[in-house]
Length: 106
Image (tube, rainbow, N blue to C red; front, side):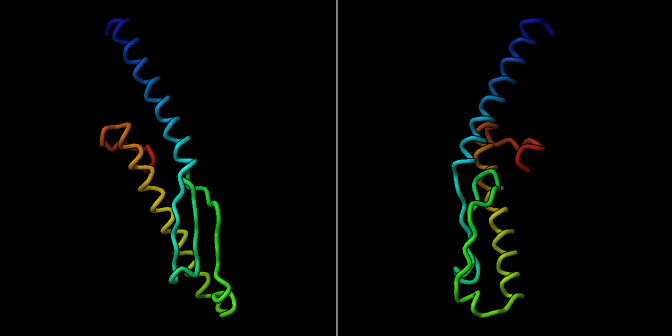
């Protein structure tokens, strides 16, 4: 491979890395909201899968049913992670042209 080819390949890698950083910054600003139990538990996360907020309805707390509360929170947390993964994959597909690259937000 010629020096010119290596430089071109290196430049492409740098460009992709720069675009990846832009996508990650954009994901930090996007949010996903999920609710369970008819809206009794709401979880909001950003596109980097960081939990922004958790809301538990007073009615659910007043039910005094730990098992139901735990199940609804676990369900909301699992669903929000799934939605964030879908969001991240959608953003990454813009960079990769739809190609699935192992290790990138999988």
